Amino acid sequence: MNKRAFNFNAGPAALPLEVLQRAQAEFVDYKETGMSIMEMSHRGAVYESVHNEAQTRLLNLFGNPEGYKVLFLQGGASTQFAMIPLNLLTEGKTAGYVRTGSWADKAIKEAKLIGETFIAASSEESKFMSLPDLSNLSLPDHTAYLHLTSNETIGGTEFKEFPGTGSVPLIADMSSDILSRSFDLKSFGMVYAGAQKNLGPSGVTVVIAREELLQESPKHLPTIMRYDTHYKNNSLYNTPPSFAIYMVNEVLKWIEEQGGLAGIEQLNRKKAGILYDAIDQSGGFYKGCAAKDSRSLMNVTFRLASEELEKQFIKETGQAGFVGLKGHRSVGGLRASIYNAVPYEAISALVDFMDDFRKRNA
Image 1 (cartoon, rainbow, N blue to C red):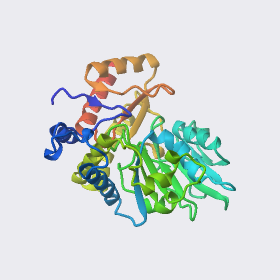
Image 2: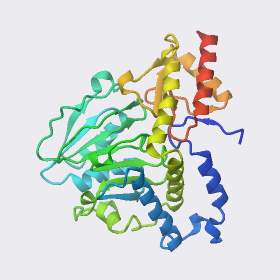
Image 3: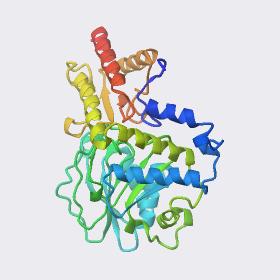
């Protein structure tokens, strides 16, 4: 396995090598059934045991809080941008959104098509390179929910703390940083995430929500767009992305082996620390994009003095075995996505390359 790339892709992203090897060993014959997990009926006992195990294992990582349910859905976080207001933004209510960048904007755009919304806080003044203070939010009595994006993948910002919202459900798109650190799930009415960054391969979207938010959906909604459909059918109303869910379960086992969320957070802080130090101690050769108090543990964004130098950096890193370091097409620059499965050795190799590149081009 010496030829594996240093994978800094933003998503689909790196998966733990141990998980890939386990899946490889079971790919053709899962548990001596004579079939791959991909070939099995989702109504069969073998697959359902994997499905239920993944739900239980995920809640256990959060301390198994009472009254929460895990759904495995499809369509990515982008479908949740619509499903949330369709199901929860009922007549006479308004939805609050925290505007922090590209992904928050996409969620807001969908909600506006469905019902009344308002911007509870915004970081537009900083060009979304910092995060707004949410400590003194004022929410109207008829607020259906408050939605935020915990980590903006493109800008490289991440909330360190989450606001108290009282009786108003707090909902978070955690596609980029779920399971990367400890937090109190009980503070949220719902969190959701596309799997392709920290949970597994693309194809499955995880929703974790208080059961009362899932039990009754507006009757006029199409069946497949109703949370209560998936809640009452244990996410088996239609054929689930069974292999992706199997992989999520294997990734969750791997997280347990790393010491759970506390262990994975410690490693993530160590990884991000050496990379941000390389940027900050470069004498201005590398310049971090996000404000220091808003920096993401998952997506490290930075710039060089010119676009020409950035193109040279991308070219040379590609030749050296590094993948995915080009910034998002909407903002340019450079970005290293250092999700849970990106090993410390990959970040260390990148830091060494950055130091050598600086010495040659300063």
